[in-house]
Image (cartoon, rainbow, N blue to C red; front, side, top):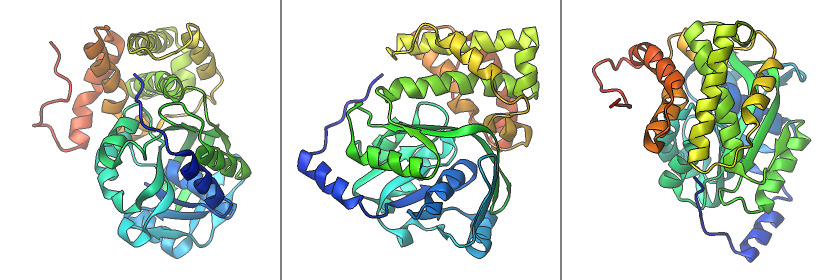
Length: 341
């Protein structure tokens, strides 16, 4: 389903392109593993990056900077700009949203002091709901589509470990219009040695990632095994394929332009991942933390019900993991988000 928003004026776009001849002012809202990694790479090249964080992680960054051990070269930013109060930061050119998918609606309201007339907001969450949520809270003129690919986790406050998957970031205008502003940001990421692209169809790109991540996260979380095991055992490999086919069917019903060969191509991509990779949703579930279950497998079930598409594999995964999710949220008395007929 494509969201249509009004384009900026040509004069305004030209003025913004002129502005970005200087260093961009970029806020990373949610500076954990994903936001911290991509923000640090931009800061390393001289972009003005402000990390919005909290708790021990914020304190560590304010006192000792941000350290990253990475397959692409280690990095230690001895001094970083970090705060827990967007009001003290003020308006920025771009916001990278690094919170978990289920935190986006609340975070969108809190980041309003960062949003000026020309600010663009880039969501990096798993799932496909964030762009519409950001548009509803901040205005459609500020929302874009975005995703990333990386296996990184916070090993300790102020310390991240990039352990797998070549870092890649993708973003685009929700109307799929060319944008000089987003091209400038893409070039900034490329200068930071991060593969970045602006696809012809950001919605298809979001669903390609969604198709992949919901399958590997869900099957991995149910089995408590890394990707190398679940792809090698015939029964769990079949679960992976069934989960991919269900998400593909939902996407096609919602008129998302995915290629017919996407299921086979995604299985092939899963075969190419390092065998010890554990998706972030699975890691959160295994550690007893609130997770993106509702935004991944739960979202497939919800959209399947809305579209009249059966999703039994995702329904099994969601129902199996929901009790632990509710315990992690200390919310056992609430009604689950999905009510089955």
